[in-house]
Length: 180
Image (cartoon, rainbow, N blue to C red; front, top):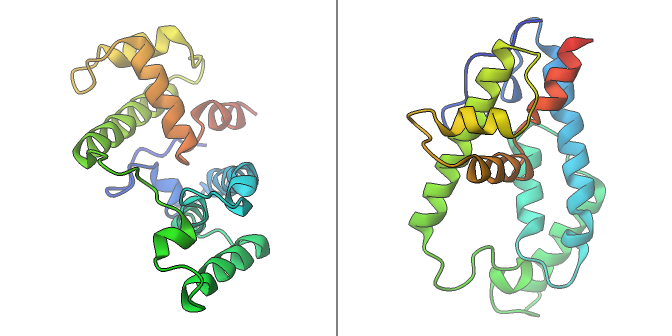
């Protein structure tokens, strides 16, 4: 099975996450499985009282990947929304949690997000071109030396794993599926 070469222009995710081209159904199944795993990982934080926007992030993850919204998430979103409409809290931030702390410099957040996308895309491109590559410090060194990245391997590694945490496709899991 050929690796997807296109990257979605908005999310930076491999195009198979957005729409599976003919013959790429396995990649879409893998993406759906990863979304389900991420939802289960985030579930305790979503259902907790001191949420920091996790419920909305999980909703966005479901919508972004055309994944069915789990019943527990629907109930949580409704419960939080009713706290606002029922006049139990004043703002949506109080009900759903504040995603960014006060005085967060959003330009810095956007720059880091762009770097995460570049790093993930570079790892994806290198591994999809050579399935024998391991996801390790050597690969992160190679990615860090690319002209559009230019970062130390340790920073590249952190950015790659942050991208996975943010819902990007795990390249190692995809590679292992391709080898079968």
